[in-house]
Amino acid sequence: MKSNWFKYVFILFIIIIIILVAIFKIRQDEEQKQQNLQNDASSEEQKITEITLGIAELDTINPILSNNKNVQDIDKLIYEPLVNLTSDYKAEPCLATEWAKQSDNSYLVKLRENVRWSSGQRFTAEDVRFTIDRLKDNASIYSYNVADVIGVDVIDDYTVKINLGKEVPFFEYNLTFPILSKDYYEGQDFATTDRNQSPVGTGMYKISDVQPSYITLEKNTSWWNKDKNLTLEKITVNLYSSIGELYNSFKVGNIDLVATTNDNVQQYIGTVGYSTKEMKGRQHTFLALNTQNYFLSKAEVRKAISYSLDKENIVSSIFNNQKFSSNFPLDYGSWLVSGQDASAGYNLDQAKQVLVDAGWTYRSQYWQITENYRTQRLVLSLLVKASDASQVSVAQNIKTQLENQGIRINIIQASDDQYNQNLANKNYDIALCEITLSISPDLTYFFGEGNLANYSNEEVTNILNEVNNTTDENVLIQDYQRLAEIYKTEVPYISLYNNKYLVAYNSGLVGDVTPNWFYQFYGIENWYK
Image (cartoon, rainbow, N blue to C red; front, side, top):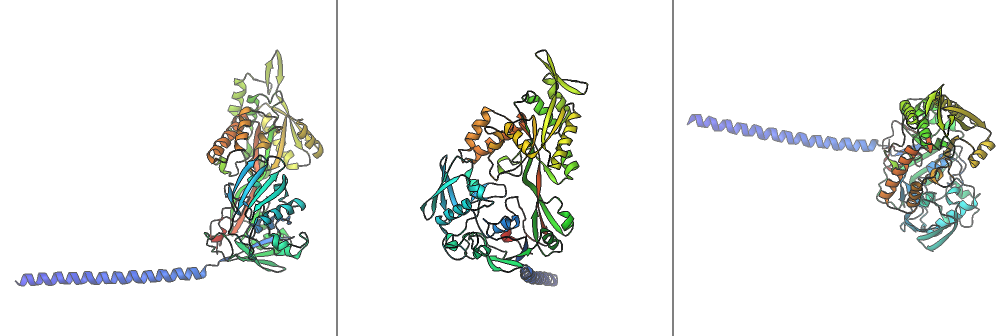
């Protein structure tokens, strides 16, 4: 009996211990939760919801009149276009909700109805027509976007019809210019009015203060996009007299972010204390192979040249790796050819093999072929602009690489006028060319009628016609990937390199910094320090 009593006491003791341990654990968890809440609150209090940017040599904050790249970039926070581009360069609605190609020469554009200017006025179709008219009668970086617009019909407050003088493939990409308020400028001299220094916009931020040394932007409480909660409350834009002064200010931590295509920027800002994002810029350098030339009409010769060129050697030895090697005009990140390799690659053995397979022989350090009882050595000319020292160096590098493979090259250094005339007349075997790529994915420049390679292909013509007349994304992806394959296998051109576009930002800046050369500020609404 006594044994059972001790047993019950022991069990009761164990139960009490368990209860006490449980109570202690619960209290400990509650205290930890309270501590976490306090830490979170402290973290929120420490979060700085403002950043500092910079503009060098400010001319005007008006995005249409400014010729300053710093201004144009920051203006995209204040003003909005009809059509925006995503980080992979896909057109997406902004002030326009939809657009439709009514005919080869006209587009119908529906506008967003819940938009107000930061002044409180309604955004309407009249603002669109006003902006296009100003782009037509003022020299602007965006004038090209509307160069083929011959008229704008206002159908109603939220619908416009844009009439073109000719068909413009992917015209919706031209609608990426900033829209200005007609009411704000009514009765003003657009080019000289003081209102150009602090105009109203529809963007996520608005100008709240303008001083000689800085401009202040704050959240636009009238912004139409209520789905985005703006963490970033304030942006101070410091004004500098020179780009060197701006770089120095970034170096000492007074600016949180700078963007540049300057190859020597690290000489100004150093190499420590910040993070960087590098991406391909819009300056695209390539070789145009004249497919009407006797030798270059042969696909094996074009392929042999492509296999023989080490692009990384050009980028490293001439540009100290301040360029990105390139394989295709759209391989800067376009959604249409994402992940696709359009290069045959650097392969000296394959270069020799394609010539041997086609009946060529290598003798006395020359490739030669016998046709119709006549033997000819493979010798080609390379046209380059003499005034561009770096391009001349590239041409000399290409000459060395190809001659090591038995493909003889004569460099023709032409004056600017003669170079342009030779391009226009297709008077070259190979031409070293550079263009500023359009924000549109249109490849008519490379594959259309009168292209620099004198290249024609019925399949390519059919593809160009199809992509100009479809909005089906799957069809577009298939067509563009096929164009990249043809570019790779037929080799009418050889892409060499693009310039670098660099965004450097303070290591204390928190948030996802994912810029491209169209827009630096994807996700800026969630940045803080």
